[in-house]
View 1 (cartoon, rainbow, N blue to C red):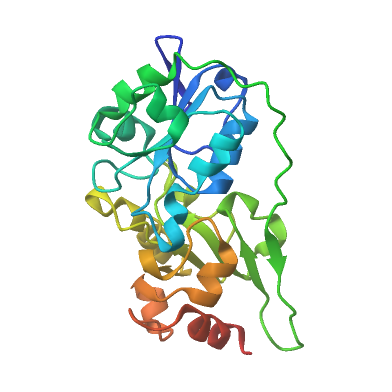
View 2: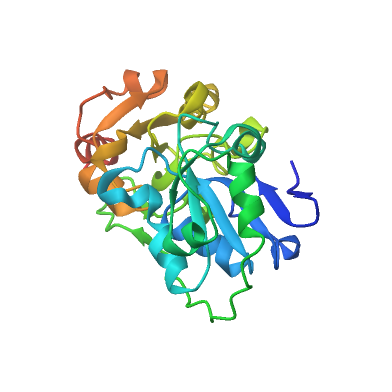
Length: 272
């Protein structure tokens, strides 16, 4: 679904990795998690204010990590509570979302926990448009050493960093496990051997697990790690710190189970 502009002031988006010129000078209310990389995507699009999903807050409060990032750029930022709306669904955030966190600049505009997301977005429309330059974000995408006879493991902060060459590889992403589009094909852009995601506190209607079944249909191993075990938006943390929380049938057949350290299972898949 295309991003929707409401009252000429607010942009509703399922994912902040697909923002365009429509966001300049407007408040972005997105279905993405509230980590730093997601906040960067909204800020790069010249958003006046940003509201994202707190993803259960996650390890080290990474689910609201975009708040400090935006504050340093003079941009109001808030999150909605993960159980209040469907992660990856901007319309649900707009319709059902309840504010769970606001950075100091958003709070100064009256945005507060317990408030409907739509009201928070309305208040952010009063903010001055920041003229601070946006520092380049070093895309965190790392291809781990791949000895002969093993399968490559790729760590990335966002599934949007997948490239065509990742077909057949093990993709470990910092993204939430929800499908960021009504199209099931969006669960993973390429036919990787396996895909790993963050469960973002599971969320309303178990939306943060939405990629698992479509990837089963494609014969792709898929799993999420537990919300508080790893930092969302950080592929390296998913790999090094994550503990599996939900697995699809294809993953279970390969030996995955809730409670197993993600790295142990991933390294087994790679043949390391």
